[in-house]
Image 1: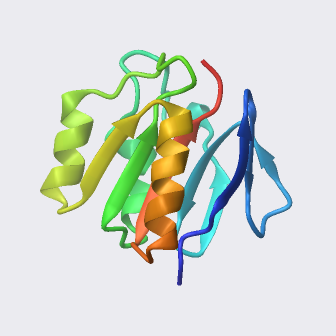
Image 2 (image 1 turned 180 degrees about the vertical axis):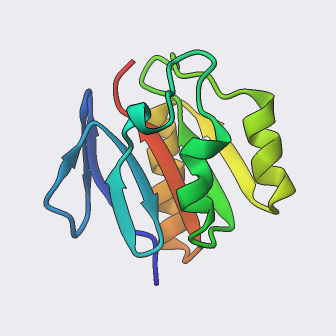
Length: 122
């Protein structure tokens, strides 16, 4: 199964190829995508992305995980979250969301088992 292309990104809106849903924040993995609802794990801009936010994507067997921190990079990513991914043998890229989407799409086009979590506003 391949990772779906992120078809469009603008402030507060993301579209994933093959999916009719417009996301504000989303999770993507080989074969799927869904809304990233921060309320599920109590995530806030600070301290930011927690391992619990990534567990679902990690369980899909990704080799690389891209984290989009928002258009203005307001979403924090603690070192403990990066360490969690590395401990699981997963390469991690933490980038501003527009750069993160471009990198994710490039990896997906190369056939890499890539997943991502993306914040589309601040």
